[in-house]
Image (cartoon, rainbow over all chains, first blue to last red; front, side, top):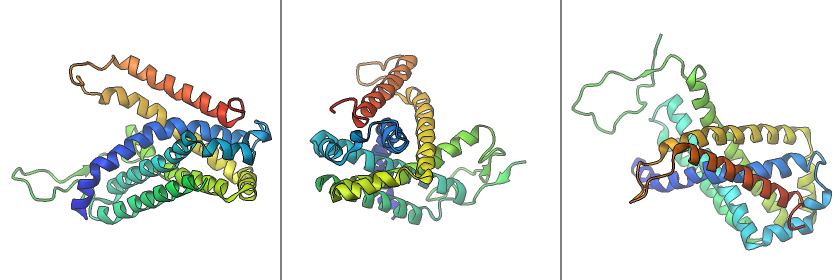
Length: 119
Length: 147
């Protein structure tokens, strides 16, 4: 497992780095509007009406952005939590923790692909 | 007073030929001094992991049809969800500010024949992209663009 994790490190770092950069850049707008402004009534209800949301999300660029919004933060989160686990608990349990966290990120990413396909 | 670190922290796979002192955790680890920002930066991983699944849930609801989408939007209006999203926004801004400060320092001195731009230029460009993309993305989601 340790050997496999080391071999996967470049791929994980690519997703982790883009999770910080692209994930952060995209999440800010999402959180401002979908997470806060719409629930607080600061944007018109029609903005996130089903027909409009579906039309925007089903566009190829919309699907790509939504997939990035799902998958990249998952990998950023998984890798940072793994790093936190090593800092607090040492490297002995790292193979189990890393497998669990990267497995979650992989599962979420696969479901993300499915979610944007079925839009 | 420095405390002993976990004995397996940073342990190499095979013992090296050079004798080394046992690792010690710094005094201020994990929540004091400069370690506070370091630990908080790693802790934002929990928020990002949760956010990935929240966005997945939203996209899944959108694919399930109007009722599921309306139910999701209504649930986001609960105080707990608003608090979670507010904390998430703070975390995302914290990551942006810290990462944008680190990013220029992490650039190689040369990329092929070209030298990267000066650090302040990279720093300013990252902020410009972040603010620009956020404004455009928020305008699209909020109905101001592509209405």
